[in-house]
Length: 258
Ligand SMILES: [Zn+2]
Ligand SMILES: [Zn+2]
Image 1 (cartoon, rainbow, N blue to C red):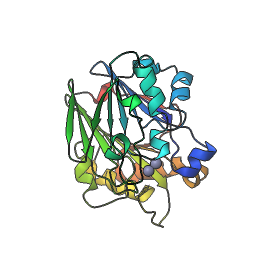
Image 2: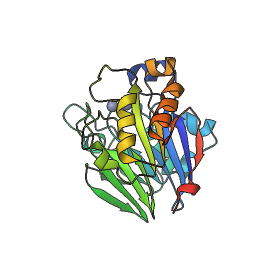
Image 3: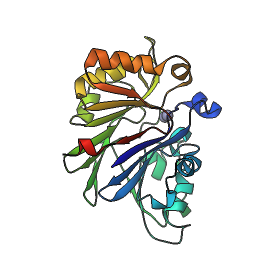
């Protein structure tokens, strides 16, 4: 099982400037399947750039209806369904992404929802796909229907916060995660509505106690300052290996399989 980042930038300005790529991440070889999570702008191009075949996606997960998360979903659906010729693949998304919510979405057209299996995931709900269980985790974000994903396979669990600010119950949502992926937009003391800061992520890591924590979806200021110094400090202070993801970063997850 392999995890690869096709982008590590997040928020409007990192996305517009492409200071970091914004293609989301892939989990390959989980129960014989490949999962693409949050295909932002460039997801298709970055897949090819890193030698990952977009036609081999089985599950497409889209956390919410902001462009840095959904932009390339439709073109990846075309890849997954062999150009909309086959009824195959499974798209799982927030209510805003699949059905639309107030002025957000739907982010995937009716046309593109015809061929794959499509599921709306609400926080707290669980979906079974083969031997993989995907649970929607709660968020506090600008898109109120935004869901994180807790992905379970056998004894292994990978949990992705998606975009959220810190709230006391957040750790409960990600408890038991072997690998915790957090969308962190900035460092510093000043709070930012709807997003995690590095110090929030540190607190979450202390509470969840994963085997490894990975920070991605970095905002411009964090990219320009030093994301690695932040993760070095978090690793030292928590004793939990914490990584600032870089574009293209690949991790073999087999060691974490029970
Ligand atoms: Zn975002
Ligand atoms: Zn967002």
